[in-house]
Image 1 (cartoon, rainbow, N blue to C red):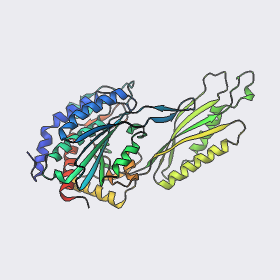
Image 2: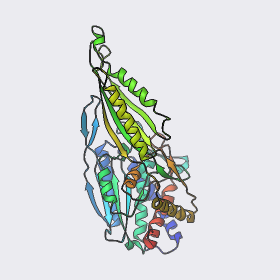
Image 3: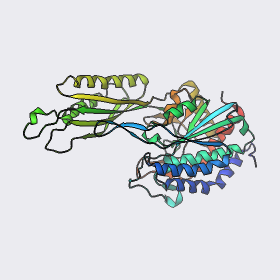
Image 4: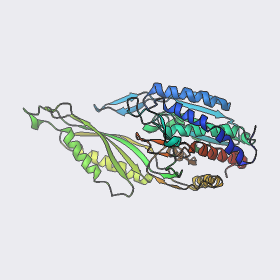
Length: 407
């Protein structure tokens, strides 16, 4: 039966489906879907296709371009990525909403963390990706089921994009996200809440991934050591210079996360590869950070028989809270208060596809997924009660927008 005007109808609806929601999270989390595990991602996608089919929308699977990366040998290679699942309904409706999630996790197929189990007498669910974001996908599914039973549903069109590469920066899906987002008035993303209280991420830093490749000159470590040019040692100088940039611009960080060089100890290493992540609060900071790295590269290239290459850049621009985005946050806060949920938002150093949406001018709230904690670690957990709580909140938001619009 269609829901009436009483919110108690929604509360009861989700209470009745809590076990089904939990069972689906467990089913999804038991399938490893690390970003590069294409067979696991395909299996997760198939499960979701079956479940989303009950909404009566249209579905399609959209292949993405391969990811380009620099290998340990310093050359560019490509790697295939999982496809995007797109589901949509009522594209002719006056108000269009984009609902964005991801199927991949940070836990690869060989990671030790694969088990899913209930803890604390069933209050918590412990497992890979239960919070980031397989729980969020389940919240999205059931909220749409509730919307479709509401008398105002025809006033709103929705489009769901479920990507497979968010955890590695959305290199393949970013273009699809941008193209689809331009058709929508607003968007919601189902990354987990910032904390167990359920609070939201507001402004987000921008994020860049860079790869530096140092080319030196190989030589025998004993016979003609001084004829060589040690790429590892010269890269160490570069790393020290990059690290010295901290504190020069508020909120800007340079994280040296990976380094590889050399093959054997009796040869001077010819190549060294270093990968860094840069976070910035403002776009002006992004330009500054990029220029700093380019300057370092230019300086190193003046040394005899050394060459330094810089690859990469900003995949996600900073998400800033413009007036329209703030109004959307305030709407979410207002509806949550009626559900006795006191939500606030705060700036966050983490990034998400919410950054991508903001870049194309679409207001979005990007932490409407479940409550939990310790994501991206072997201690990741989901607060089971938040499945129904957040699904009810999203359903009320969508019903409110379908009835009153978003002005």
